[in-house]
Structures are given as C-alpha cells and as structure tokens.
Amino acid sequence: MSYWRSPTYILARVTFMVISSLMFAVLFWQKGNKIYNEQDVSNIMGFMYISTMFLGINNCSSVLPIIARERLVFYRERFAGMYSSYIYALAQLLVEIPYILFLGATFTVITYPTIGYSLSANKIMWYFYFVLCTILYHNYLGMMIMSLTPNVQVGAVIATACYAIFNLFSGFIIPHPHIPGWWIWLYNACPSSWTLKGLLTSQFGDVSKDIGAFGETKALNTYLEDYYGFHYNQLNFVGLVVGCFPISFACLFMYFTAKSNFQRN
Image 1 (cartoon, rainbow, N blue to C red):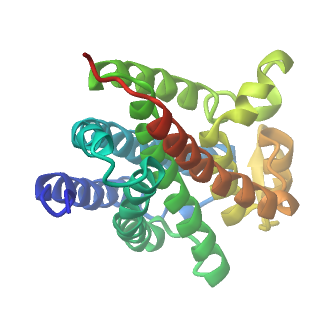
Image 2: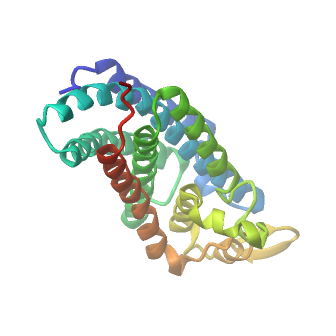
Image 3: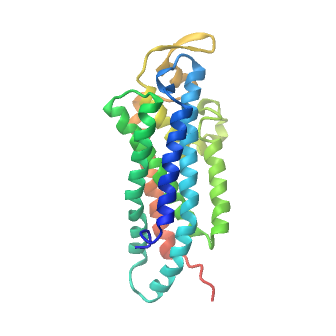
C-alpha cells in the first residue's frame, strides 16, 4: 500500500526512464549496426556502460529514502508482533518487481531498435534480461545498504562508494585483460563488469564480420575475445552470474532487516 501512496516516487522513476531512454536513443542512433573499427566497438560499449550505470545509480539512490521511511513503521509493527520480519522484507522485495519489469521493458522497447541492434529474438531477450537484472540488483543493493545503515545520509555515502567501484571495475575504463592481477578479484566481484560482458557478448560475440582494430583486420568476435576477454561460449554462465546478484542482495536485505535494529532508546 505504501507504494500506491507514493505516486511521486513511482512517477519520477517512470519519467526518468522514458526521458533517459529517449536521450540515449538520440545520442547513439543506429550505432549498433555501424561497427567498422575498434572505436565503433568502444562507442557502443560506452552506451552500454553509461546507460546501465546511469539508470542503476538513479534507482539505487531513489530507493534509499523510501526504505528508511518504511523502516520506521516496520519497527513499530515488529514490536507489536504483527508479522514476521522476513515476510515484511520479502514483501518489500516483491513489490519492486512489477515496476522494474515495466522500467526494463520501457528501456528495451525504446533503445533496442533505435540503437540498431540485430532484430533477433534471442538477442532481444538477452538484452532485456541484462537490463532487467541490472536495474533489479541496483534497487536491491540500495535496499540492502539501508538495512545495514542507521539513516539515509550514511547509506548515501556507502552507495556512492559502491558506484565508484562499479565504475572503475566495470571493464570499460580498464578492459579485463589489462587489469593488474592483484585487482582482478574485484573485477570479478563487480556486478557492472558482468552486465557489460553480457550485453556486449550477447549482441556481438557471434558476429564474425571483419573490422579494423589497431592497424590490422580482425573478426569482431575475435577482437572481443582478445581485447576485452569476452567469449561467446561463456554467455550462459555470464547470464547466470548476473542473475545471482539481485538474489544475493535480496537475501542480505532480508537477513539484515530481520537482525538489525537502529532504534534509539
């Protein structure tokens, strides 16, 4: 019920998604079918990187005050023994799914054809799946952070630190093969790196057309393997890993919601 009583929150998310999708559609119009050299690959990967980070950060940041406000009511009702803490947390998680499905579908419908990706049912479904999981794990990350922190201010600081890590270790600024060995664990633990890997591999990992890459001619899929370390035969595994992030954040949110208490006497 609280979500129906927060029309501003819901409307703001939908409006932001529509405007952002249209903006990306205009900026990257038909870039997906104009891959001729390594710069074109970098451009389309830049779209994937910017859009997922942009939308993810917005969703994560916007959910923080909502969870903080709902927690005040939850403490009172938990003290009265009205329902289980785990059931409350599960309800908070489930109520987000219809909205995020709508947001993911909106982004996919607007950006997929305008960017110029292949109109393959398999690739469309992969694109929607990775976009959906990305929005979902950012939302659940924000919820998990609030379950660990006493107020929105502290939560925002921790969320900002997460954004910085997601940016730096996404694999766009520094490709996977060029990350120093002692930092590769953080790349592998970073959800944004798996999102980018999934989006780029699902769209171009099976494309063998020749492109110019640093003064030589290479097949596009070979270039992705050599420069980014993205292998098409790993796509199903990448999809599984990306799907595990929202589930993990959701489970942690449920646990810490049930176990933590930031009330002051």
